[in-house]
Image (tube, rainbow, N blue to C red; front, top):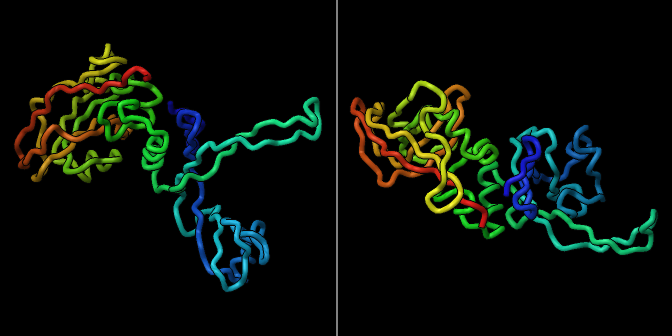
Length: 262
């Protein structure tokens, strides 16, 4: 379902595209902006801005901030729309009408993170969450690319967290209330096996002696690969639990299952 092309482009089910790019900005058109060495080659007074509106001095204009001078890049979502008929003017198909698909911006076109953009892309397609894993809040791209093997061969640390983490730092530092470091890659999960319903699954190694390092309410678990400082998976606990620094915690074995395609 997910087809990645390099670091900046992900195609979802062949119908939605998520692509990293510079942010669109809106400012009042001034001579200074239009004379800018970056902007001048693309936008001039009397010509269309990035939104297709004619640029007039003193009025707002949209433009693409190619070098991210004032903002970090974002992730854009595009949808493959209906077919445009194009009449070929040369070659062996000259005079024929051919269909040409177009990628157009989605209704909500831009997001601050790839994860948020991919979640929106899945919603646009009407795909059940079960299609990418049962009730899974977060799966790193490498898990999607490598299936379950990366959990079997690389995961070596569990954390209990006060809220859902989205990065390794959040899982192991910002939100962690305790951890169990298994000490060696590939010790946090077992080898892939047949899923309970369909597809394949891996079962986590039960934790009985996790170290509680903070006082608070644990609501999520996180599985990480310490060597590459990478968060691999995270989800909510079956129930929140108050913990106190200095105590130990237990985390029963659980499954991560990727079902067969519907």
